[in-house]
Each structure stands twice: as C-alpha cells, then as structure tokens.
Amino acid sequence: MSQTLLMPKATAVWLVDNTALSFEQIAAFCTLHPLEVQGIADGDVAGGIMGVNPIQNGQLSREEIEKAEGDPNYRMKVSDPKVRVAAVKRKGPRYTPISRRNERPNAIRWLVRNHPELKDAQIMRLVGTTKSTIDSVRENTHWNSANLTPMDPVTLGLCSQIDLDLEVKRASKDAPTPSDFNEGTTLLTAEEALARAGGRSSFEAEEGFEDADRAPAHQPADDAIDADSVFSKLKSLNTDRADEE
Image (cartoon, rainbow, N blue to C red; front, side, top):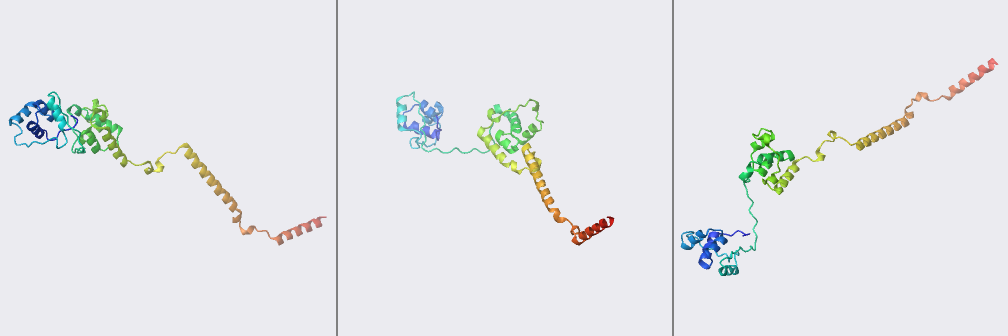
C-alpha cells in the first residue's frame, strides 16, 4: 500500500463488525496477522477498542469493499488522501544502520579532506558520529587509521546529497570573501605590475617636467644685469684699443 492506514486495529474492528470480508483480506488491508484479526472477531484481541469507519476518514471507498466482498482473492487498497499533511521533521541524532556504522571513519576522512570548512558539529549531524571520533580521524590517532579510505558519505548512505550541500553552503557563508583579504598579501599579475610601473614612471616624468619649468623662477635676484656697468666696461675697452693704436 502506498499510503499508511490510520489506526489499523480500530479499522479492523469496524471491518469485522460491518463487512463480510475474510480475515485474510482484513489482515492484508490493516497490516495485521490473520490470527490477530480472528482474535478480534472472537473478542480476545483489541478489547475495548472502538471501531473506526475507514469510509468516513476517506481511506477506503464503499466500492472497494463491495469489490473485495465479491472476490475473496482481491486485496483492498488505501485511497489517496484528499489532503496531504507534511511529514514531521525528525529531531535528534541521525540513525545509522549497523551495517554502515563501520564506514563512518571513512566518511569523516572524506569530509575533512574535501570540505575542511565544515565544523565538527556539521560533520556530526551529517554522519551521526562524535567529536572524539572526528578528532581521532583528523589527527590520525584512530585505532584503524592505517586502513581508512576516504569515501563519500552520500555514496555510503550516511546522509543525502541535499543535506551535504546544505551544510557546505552554511559553512561557506562564514568563510572570508576575496575582498576581505589584504591586497599586500596577494601576488599581482604581470599586466597589473607593468601597468602600475608605467603609471609611476609617467607620474615621475610629469613631476620632473614641472620642476624643470619652475627652475628658472627660483634663480637669485643677484644675477640681474646692470646696464651702466656694461656700458662703462665697453667704454674702457674702446679707450684701451685707441691708446694701443
């Protein structure tokens, strides 16, 4: 049956009292043993339990009952519910089958190696292990450390891919973004280094040109030319030449 029957014993009580179905048909529909259904009919089992009509709660139709009453080999099926109720989210530690419990260290080693950003609490939720086991696998102090092989916990059936992706996404939110790193600790590409060197050279060249343009303005005032002294020197030179002639 694709759907779960509500209150199987109470439903079996009602079917025994109100239908002509065989014990095997009622047992198959209510997931009970035929002897248990016979005990309900004899009054030895389910004493004091009030019968529940499966037709009223929408889990069985009158046509299905009539079809089963006409054919002893027919097995009734639970009707599809008109309203689907969301499954209650399970709380508490994850249950791991006994056959898979020995694979936990292998899954822990895979998670530690491939997703180092995961916290111990997240690994504990995914694999269903303890912090001491995680520490022993991470520090290679596990009793079977030499034989451990990294294995995907999803492949091992220890967790679902959705749960793993969710935990990795949560862990990545706490990781620093590239913009948070200091620029001084990163290496520049060749293009960036050449661009910065070229910009610095052009800047220094411009500064040099400006200094050269400003240099004449800083000459001392003592270098100014005196016209009288120049003419007096020329007159003395002419006089000396006349005397020599």
